[in-house]
Length: 306
Image 1 (tube, rainbow, N blue to C red):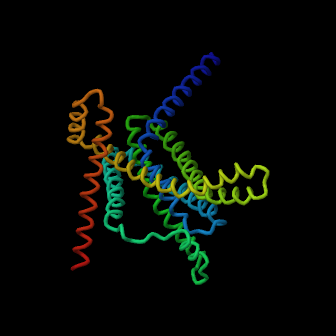
Image 2: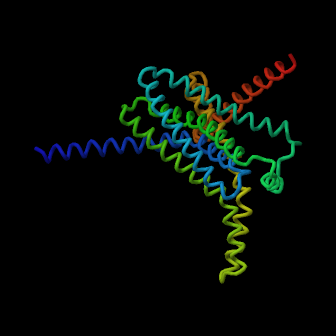
Image 3: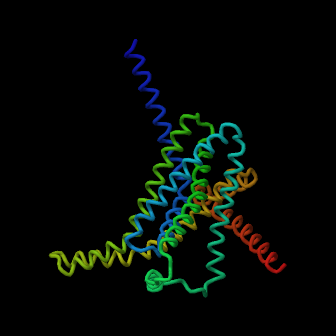
């Protein structure tokens, strides 16, 4: 009897873990856009910090991110337990925010193309300026990054919880907690690697002057130095596109009339239904984001002129 009970318990645990793994995979796909933006934003936040302080700053922001999720995960679970309909509302609001943020980025690039972007030399000069309080600058960067992380973490938690509707409480807790920990470690681990790419490239270039494998080290060093800024730009572009796709997807799946339109569009060419669905999500995201961004810009100008 004891052996049978043990086998039944093991079977229940295996089934639970299988459900958790399946739902974690599904939730991770839906949060990909926010994670991409989170990665790009946090990598950009560290720029302008002294090289020897980059990793401590990343660790400080990662600590703040863990605290953010320690607050957000229980709050989201309580809302899901007592006011489940609010999850859909929050999900739609989160989708609208993602679309707005993506549109704001595009509008900023279109309307401020002539603005000069500080180059590497200017950043180095700022760091060498003794009149700047670098300690306060670092603290401000950490606080700003943690505030940004709170918003993006809220989006991740709500989107994840939205994909877990119908699951039991234990599964929701395991998936939310597991993904929150994994996402935080993954994002800030990658951020740490990205911000140190140029340092590693410079180290390899210097070592190539004396090392026996100078050719391969020189090639690797130059590649890393060249790839670091390109990677930052790619992450920014991919993150923006993903925000429209994820935000638009949330809207089309949560708002009935948009969902019906999306289904009708996918029936135009059944063999391309997946591509049409993704395209519709992106277009819906761009339109929604543009409307909100233009409305906010108009209101802001009216207030300034008043």
